Length: 254
Image 1 (cartoon, rainbow, N blue to C red):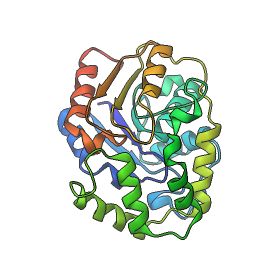
Image 2: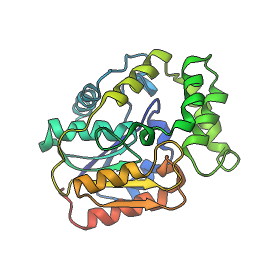
Image 3: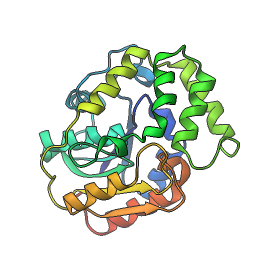
Image 4: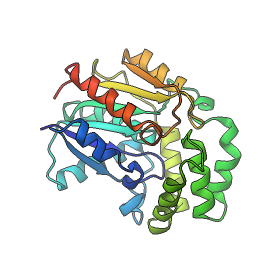
């Protein structure tokens, strides 16, 4: 049985996957699907977020062993989670059978103005430094990460507001995660055949060219959804599950 480990991004937690973990279980019925929170997020929001992506990977390794999950692992990682996946594979290549990276970016392959689109700087800076308001903040995050629109995603927005109130991410932890992401630089290209990259053409937060540049540099397969935004499992869950199923069918390592 393969183990698929799902890693979310900046200031997000396991519940932000919504129904996707169960959909992945149906798509890969022989797989074990595990969702993890990064330190400082979700059920770990009282902890301190590391300022190094490599330390986040170490925490994930410890969490899986505590759950009785032994490697090798398959990773499904979104945004900052994608950096964690790359750092993990570089440090412990024998532990990672394969990884799917969603809407991610990283130095030295992607310039800063593509990794975080400049039009979003004022809003994100205001959210980071201003008084926390879950309703306002989650509306902004949804607008930036989904192409579906606020009204179309009203149920999702209500859930996200609830998560933010129940497990708030402190300003200090948010800044630590931003610092870790900004400083992270990808190591040498990973082993061939281990990574699949997926992106949304309507990503308002991270330019989809970031995934394309990584795919070219690593000689890795890439698929881009024409209508989806940054949060691919939210905007195009069926498509993401199908791309993973098809990739697994090509014979990636078990």
